[in-house]
Every structure is written in structure tokens, then in C-alpha cells.
Image (cartoon, rainbow, N blue to C red; front, side, top):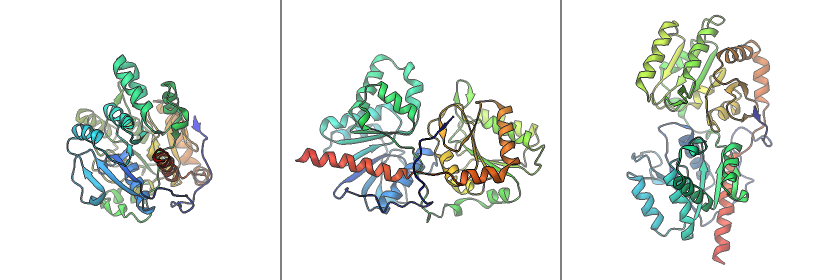
Length: 387
């Protein structure tokens, strides 16, 4: 299943010059984390900051990871004790438009309730974690989350399932904005230089090149969330047809070391040591996408995968499981079905010019501009409140 909700094409490279800005005198207070580590949310924040810099919008990032940053230090405030800071921030007077990106339910409640003190608050709900966990929460926890989310000035949700969930909680639909989290990278970023020569050598000596990524090893209902095991089996099957096939899998945090050892053992059993490369350092992923023939997203649960939208944006044929609505242009396969997965990847490789042309002709929306429009709307509310 794919999501056909997409707008007119934006040229590759952001063009926000036609966006009518009315944020003079407003400051955005982002709450989240800046990469590294490179994950969907951290990369989204990084690129949102690039957009705000481009538009000369005043902002600050409260980095709750608690690590001092050299880059963009003037815009980043290191928060070493997030929970204590959140309470202090709640009580202190400020005029910032607060935009929360954290997934912890306590943070969502605290930031949401800041509106009771007259503050303007926005939250982006990046994942379906709340939906999956809702049945496990007791009555009081569910009620606190519901009140917190209802209290936000505006909510940004990254897919229609999260939107439906918010509506089911009685949240006013007029303040919910469905905006996928993907923002293209700034063209001047030199992140390609951060990739070690070893990785480029692997890519240069293999064909075709497939890629996939995960933040870290995670399990859902006892299964590998990111389908790393499926990628290994897929690589083995495709090697029968393309002996020089290469699969690059970014895994900046292994997480479960025992399971990671099992995956490495499986590579040895299938004689894939020269065909499958794990990248376990926190490097940016999009330079690898630019060199990939196919992108893989075999997750058994998901939100709105930024790396999937990024692959499509760069014109890379992409396959993903059918566990959620996928962006228009994605080739979907049955969840955890290695036979269906293999057949569809092989079809892409067998008919590559067709699939490449198809994905390169896809339209794209400018999601960064739509986020800025939410800021405009919230800033307008504040001006009205002052009258």
C-alpha cells in the first residue's frame, strides 16, 4: 500500500523564496538532538536548522542528548539533565515558540501543558510508538498524555495513522498538520568527505549495490524490527544471479551484541563476508544512497521513514514492507516474506531502466516550507493574543 498524498514537484534543492515569512521578532525553541548519532529524527532536526538558517529565522536547539557540540555551537544549548531542565523551562517565562521533537511521553506532557502558562507549543510526533504502546498504559498515564497532546497549540504528525490516533483522543483536527519529516539535505553540505575510503572501495568493487539502515538493533513482537536478517538472506539469494552484488547496511549502534554476533555468523555460513558490509560508526547515510542501485526498508513496524523518502527523492528504486502506508513510488512486499521480498528486488534489478525512470519522475512536496507555515500560524496566534 502506498500513500498517494503528494503535491507538485519541487526542484531538487530547496526553494523557499516564495514562502511568505512573518516570523520577524519570533524565536523558535527546538527540543531534540543534533547528529551524531545519525537517525531519522536527528537528521530531520539538522536539516530543519539548515532551513531556518537559510531563512534567517531566529532559533535555538536545546540538545537533550547532553553532549557538547563543536559545530553550530552558537545555536545549540547542551542539556545535561533533560528532566530537571524541562521542569525549569516549564516555569521560566519566555516568548519562544517551543517545538518539541522528543518521543518520551513525560516530555510531551510537560511541553503540552506549557500552553496553560500562555506559551505557544508545537510537537512533531515522529513515530507510532504511542499507538503501539497505548494498550499497555494505565488509565492515568493515558489521560495525562491525552491532556498533554490536547494542550499543544499545534501538532505535526508524520503519517495518517498518527493523525487518526490524535483525532481519536479528541484533539481538534484544525490544529493537526500532516507533514512527513523528510527535508532534503543542504546542497553545500560536505558529508561525503566523512565517509571512510573503505566504504567507497566496497561500493566501487560491487555491482549491483543495495543499501539499508537502522538506528540500532531493536525487536518488535520478537522479530528484528529493521529486517537485517531478511537483508542477509536476500543478499544470499541474489548472489546466485549477481556474484558481485554488494549490500551496505548502516547500523551506527549495534544495541543487542548477542544478536549482532548471530547476524555475523549467518554471513559466514552463507559465505557473504565479501558481499555484505556492516557500517557500525555514526556516518551520514545519504551519500551512500546516492551511490546505491536499490534501497531496502524491510521493517516489521514503522512510522514515516525519512531514509525511504530520501531514497525516492534521490531517484533510487526503493522497496519496503507493507506494514504501514508507504510514500508514493515505493515498491511494497509482504511483511517478513523473504520469497516476495526476493522476487520484487530481482524484478527491479532485471528491469532496472524502467524502475529507475519511474522513480526519477516522481513529484515531491516541500515539507520544510510547510513546517515554516505552521510556525507562521502559531506566531500569528501570539500576535492576536497580544491585541
